[in-house]
Image 1: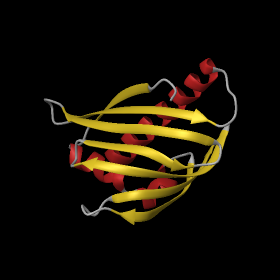
Image 2: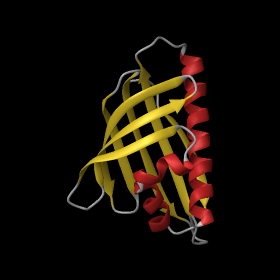
Image 3: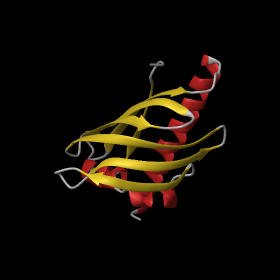
Image 4: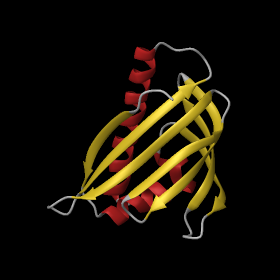
Length: 146
């Protein structure tokens, strides 16, 4: 698996509010720029999505893929790609930590392995852009209260 990229952002909301937006896959096409479709295929015993199918258009990377999710309350979610076309693998997580001022520090980690060759430097730059955009969109969605 490729190197993992990690970024963090502070969101002015409780961890439960942030995790509720992360877990609301049906609305990803509304607020994310790159996810064009998200469909929950299987729900876990906790009522949250266990398996989700995505249609992605992130400019250079266009794909249809499925991820499996493992939830740890409102503090962490991990995922692994189980099938894809352009991506061979995707492993990621969001870790949420409540800060002293009542906000939430969100740390996003992501590793992607593409089926097409791409220079490591370009791939890491693409991962950073995807992560930076995702965190900013998440912050905007949570803080707007939509």
